[in-house]
Each structure stands twice: as C-alpha cells, then as structure tokens.
Image 1 (cartoon, helix red, strand yellow):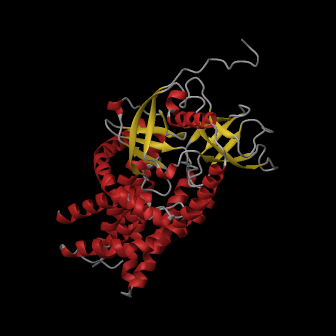
Image 2: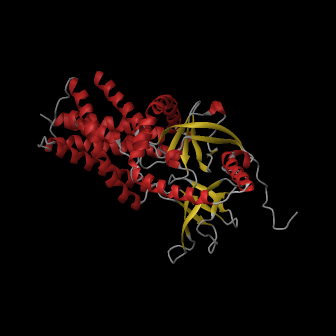
Image 3: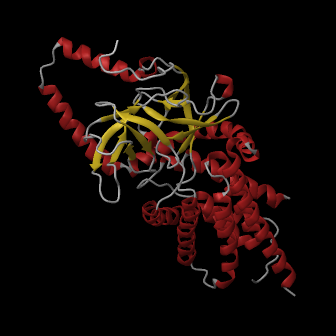
Length: 166
Length: 287
C-alpha cells in the first residue's frame, strides 16, 4: 500500500514539475521527459510488472491532462517500463555511465515509439522524430542524475519486490 | 519454478497494452464527448489547482534557467535590438509619429476590441508535458463563461482554441500543434487557405487556390465564416518563406511565423463572444 502511494506521488510530482518547470526549459524546441526517467528508475528497482503498471498510469494521467490522442503515452511508457524491467537482469554492470546510457537509449526509444504511433493519426512527422529523439535523449541524460537516484532511494527504503528473472 | 510469475507478468503486460489500445480507439472515435473526454475533464479539474500553485512558485526558476538556455539567442537579439534602438534614436520623431506609434501599441493590446469580440482574461498555469503536444492550461473555465472551441488570443495575435473545459480550468490547443488547422487568409489580397501547425517549426499556410500570390512579409489573418471557430481579421503571423508550387505540390507551401510567442505565453484572452460574420462576402465596389 505504501509503495502504491509512493508510486502515485512520484507520478504527480514528475508530472507537475514537467508541466510547470521543465516545460519552460526548452532547448532546440524540446524539453526533458521526466516521466520516462521515473519509469526507468521504477523498472530498475521493481522490475517489469510494476514498471509497466507505473508506466501505464503515468502515461494515462499525462495524456488525460494534455494529449489530443489519449493513450499513446500510456502505451509507450508501458512498453518502456516492461522492456527496461526485463532488461535490468541482463545488465551486469553497476557503472553509472551504463545506467545513464540506458536512460538515454530508453528516452530515444520512447520518442520514436510515440512518434510512430502518432504517425498513424498524422500528428507527427519523420523530420520531427529524427530531430527530436536525439535531443530528448541528450536532455534526459542530463536530467537522469537528478531524478534517478532520489526515485531509486525512495523505492529502496520500502519493502523489496520479489525478483523474477525473465 | 519461475513460470507462474513470468506468466502473470506477461498477462499484466498484455492487459495494459490492450487497455492502452482501447483508450486510444475510444478517444479517437468518441472525442471529448466520450468516456475518455469525461476522464480528461476530471484530470484537468484535479491537477489544475496543483499546477497553478506549483507554476506560481517555480515559474521564476524556470524563467531563470530558460534564460540561461537561450543566452546565445538573447545575446544576438540584444545586439540586434541595440542597433535598432540606435537607428530609431537617430531619427527625428515628430509628434504625429509618436501618436501613430502609440495608436499601434494600443491596437495590439486591445486586439479583442479591434475584432469586436468580448473576451475573458486568463493566465497560463501549465504547459503540455509532452514533446508531441502543443497545449497549455489556463485558469479560466466554464464558470468564467469559457466553452470548447473558443478562440484564444494575446496582445500579439491568435494563440489557439479551447479544446477542453472544466469548471475553473481549460486546455488550449495552440496553433502550432500538428492537429491544429485554422481557416486563414493573406491580409493583402484576402487569398484564403488553411494554416496548419508543425510543432516547433513555423506554421504551414496552404493556399486554397493554385497560383495564389503570397510574398515574404505578408501578414496572415484569420478568416471568419458562419459557424467558424475564429473571428475574422485576427493577426496570426507573418510569411517567412514561400516554397513555390512544384510537381509534388500544386500549391505553394508558405511558412508563417506566428506573432504570438507561443513558447512563453503568460496572459491570454479567450473570445467568449465574437461578431457574426456576414452571410455572404461583400463584392468589390458593391454598396
């Protein structure tokens, strides 16, 4: 129960910070995607199932607040959360650099995934995807050291989730 | 031994993916009047006050860091503005010039009055969290007379239209959003067209007729029509570039730079009542 409340609080805080503070910090027309970093942090600590549920909830709330096509972020964050959760078992390195690169790669993938789904509704273009994905990945790389450790520390203070190798 | 949790995990993933696809489908088919639209109203009503309170506290911080991020551009702009100021100081201004300038400034600030519209003022409390959506939340809603599809302007020109409304907050879809389309015309010759959003890039004006005369520097304004969203004559932006018609495109593609600074919106006005446009367009020389 405490874990669920904590995960809910992480969604609210990430979303509020993203839509008020980060939205004004656009570089090259894009801003960092704090939610995806939170999803990655949850995936690395709690594994694929919790991360997928967390990603779905975070994406859905984000979509309900702003998106014209509700459900796209929910779909993307679910896939990213599950994928990172499964992938954590195969990452043997505890190097900070490796985790940073993983966060960057997941951010890059999330932009492309969202862009591909939105292409179906003609709400995204190839030009935009090619230009935006690396920028968001880079921006998220810079933000990861500020978001990842506190989320991880908060989750690790509570009772651990049983680990299952995929 | 590990099969049961793994099966459960896969089942959870499948359920979530199906749920996401169902939500996307429901939203696409039923729009804001369906169950997803009602959920959106609840989300905006719940998060609006939180975003407003947080935005008030964090905005100065965001502006500070935003200023640092744009230092290079600001330096260039500062240099350009200083040159401009020097040039302007060098000119001998007459009293009439100052009066005219004053009138222009007043005209820009009273955009609503110019178009004969009744407006409700609002502050921007949050900006879209997604890099794929160009929308803002404002602190005025149904209780202040706001309804969906109302036009939103600022002192510089058109900003967007209201897409979602709750009691005290509304979401404004900006004209830069790729799903935005505005009926517009070139102010100089009234040539009609559609203005589409392209995200961070300039707006794309697509003239209705092939061979339309559009030139860089032309002003593009809203085109009013019966049942339309936007009042006629609201300035939208200036033509920045014209890519002539080609074998791939029968009409010219015109890049339009919006007058309103859509990335730094602060105070806006929602057009709650607009003048009714004439049923038929007046003919040249007609009485």
